[in-house]
Image 1: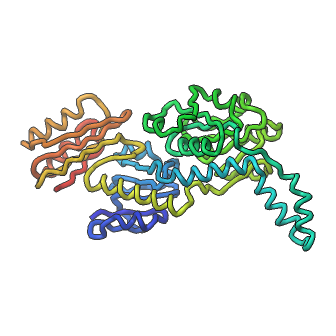
Image 2 (image 1 turned 90 degrees about the vertical axis):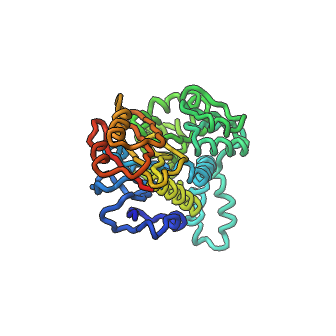
Image 3 (image 1 turned 180 degrees about the vertical axis):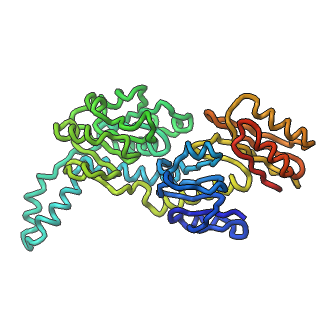
Length: 393
């Protein structure tokens, strides 16, 4: 029986994938094997030593102490691409409302014309000239980050008649093949900044990307550029953007990350983190998170982890055998130590998969027969081993 703690409301379509004969799922479980989370901040949480994995029903993991958990052997999953269409649609909306001041126009109609009675139509016609904005067709969109969301935005913008240039130093073959052939990929950020009428950001927030939209970047942008940020609030230096709006360098910022200073500026449109707020995206994320968590707990497989390497075997656990799931430091000779311990215990290895990612490694070792507690303890005591988890067939 596995115990799963939920820190946020997770769509039922995902939770229903857990067989209740083998899983208990609740918000108040004190000693969980795994955690399902959306937006809850886990940085100040003290986790039970029994926790083996955390699955985030969403792409971003800034609310999870991933590096700290990695050192404890806790695998953190996310669900890249599951909410991509929802975010893509909102980004396209962001591009449109950055151009056409429809939000301000609606506010004007609802407030200034509310009590004008029969004059509303006439006054509205006279006032519409205050809310003119350019069309996006024929304009140039710069897409920073061509992952699942960025690529979808780029392709949709092409379909809407925009010229699209993209930048992604880590562009995967899969993503490249999915791009419309009319998307021009450039090799530097300046290739975006100097040419784009609109810029949308789709990269994770890291030490390298935090505050990347700052005064020096803005300086080389086109005058009157319009910025869209539905990725992470910290990618934008708000003070620098507000100064550029005041000077006229930036026409508009549309952001999904409200801030005290930003909401005071009438050239900034703040939304309350709506990117993935569709029932379809919530269902997709819950399903993907649940499937990944089940596969890890039941088979040891790791797919879409942000802190451990992808490690997958399609082989079933040998009948009557054991699968050893071992997290370890990526140091020389550690795998040979595993085989030595198992050899000393007269255990026959049926199959092995070992992968590494940075300073961490992960192994799946299939062994004929049941591995006893003493052998598991001997493996756990090896220098470089973080934890050992047996799965018995």
